Image 1: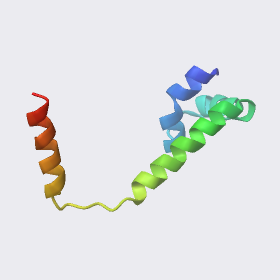
Image 2: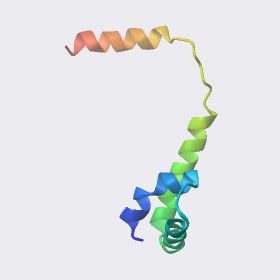
Image 3: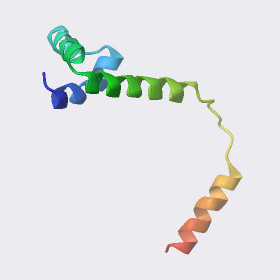
Length: 75
């Protein structure tokens, strides 16, 4: 597996849904490639950070005002 192939399956690898042979190739590539290991770790950290954000169902009035102001300005 090369870097492009590894990056194509990184989501499945992190979700642990890769078939066994692809998982083995992915892990072998990670052992050899520090750049991909770094990238995968950054993705893993980002996913965990996003999961830890509060799930607020409250509308954000200020956000809506800002979006509307930009829409008016750039139409």
